[in-house]
Structures are given as C-alpha cells and as structure tokens.
Image (cartoon, rainbow, N blue to C red):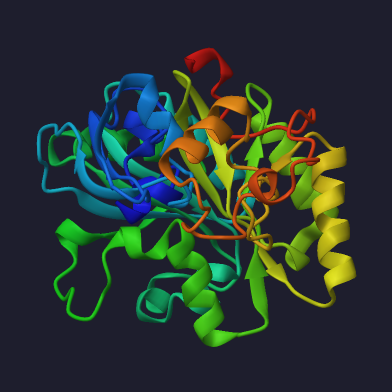
Length: 321
C-alpha cells in the first residue's frame, strides 16, 4: 500500500511499465478520514485518485494486483569501457522482444567499483556496467546478443561458484544504487529524471557530456506508454544547494524532466498533477485535512496555480471524471 501511494516504477518496469499504467493495479480498498469512516472499493480510473497521492486522501488497506509466470531470474552484469556504449547496449537489449528481461540498468563508472563493495572484485574502476535480470530460457540468446556488442559479461550468477554475501542484482539498482553510494560517501545525493523518447539516448549523452563525474549517470530502462524509454537516477556529488538547483535547471532547459526528490510536496516533486478532481476527492474523503497535512499545496493554498505547463509523470484526473 505504501508503494502504491508513493511509487511509480521499479524492477519489472521494462516489461510491465509503471504503476500509473491501467491494469497494473486491479483494485484498491481505502478507508476515508471522516467522522464516520467509509470503506471504498476503487477500480479503473478511480484508482488514479489514490495512486501516488501519498496517503493524502485515504488509507489504503488492500491492494489487488495481477501476477504472471514466475522465473528463476539469472543476475548478469556486462562491463563497458564507455558509459554511452553501456546505455546503447541497454537500449538495444530492451527492444529485443525474444530476450525476456526483468531489469536493465546501465550505471556509469566509477559507481560500481567504488560503491558496490561486495561485487567490487568483478569490475575495474573505470568500467561502466549494465545490470540485468534474464530468464533462464533466454540466457543463450542473451549471451549471443552480448557478444555482438562492445561489452564483456563480467558476472553470471548461474556460473559463479560462491554467491555467499552477494546481494541480488536488483539491490544494486533503482534507488538501492543511491543508498549504497551514501553508505560510502554520505555527501552524495541524487535526482530523478526522464529523458524524452525517442531521443532519450541523445538527452542522456548531452547530460553526461555536460556534467561528467559531478553527476554520475544511472539509467533504468522502462516501458512507458508502450514504448521503451529511459528513467534516470543519477548520483550528484553535492556541493551547495545553489549548484543542485542549477543542475536541475540545466536538465530542464535541455528537455530532461526532473521529478525533484528534494521537495516534499505532492506538486513540487513533479510526479502527480493536482486538479479539480483530485481536490474534490480529498474534500470528500478527508474533509478536515488530517491525512498527511502539508503534503498537497493546492489543499493548503486555494490560490495555488496547479494548471502550470510543467510535465508530470501522473497526469491530472480531469479526463477521468
């Protein structure tokens, strides 16, 4: 319930997209914050009123989601001398419909060597990597595909004699990457980005060329509205708040969307757009504003302009009615 209330994607998004995509959540049961609480069963577009609303308009007590076939996924890591080669490999792998992957994560050097301490012996410090989870039946095809590129397979869990102490591949990816870096260097922070398709690799390269090791790149390939795209969770070697704001502005000026993890309100983070429907639902389910107070600017400030042209991951609900 917490992830549905605040999350957007993660491991498996390369196949199934994000939580915002209709069908990835079947039903939500929520309880309202009224004098006489009601239990609400939400399906279809009605669920979008609660998803990624951070618990501002109801307490999620039950989530129903679809399942698919279970595989004994194999963790694989491919090393590259150049990060953009790693990014290109990840993109090319993502569009291989016959190679079943659950995770495709390019990460720039020196992040893997410096911060993935238990896997460190598999990398050189100057090596960028792509972390993958591949279905067993697709491994021969994956190996053949990898051979055609510029990378080398540096780790295969199915061929490693001693896996003791090694975390699974998904614990090197998404925001686990950030957490592992912070354990070594507490001054590091991060951003959340989207690089618009179909030119997402060009946007990535522009930012890599601009910032270099000040903002080490970390991509997650995802399926977004039916097309392959790239989300970014780049690390930031923090110096000042002013520089962090400048880095965000430069991304946005170059067409890269930033969902700012350094803002705590619903609207400023850029994930979910507030509109009349969202506000009306909160008035209905939490008339006293007791749930997560201060999280929704449009609730606290009637004059707030939520109709701005800013890009949001979760669009407004006006069409949902």
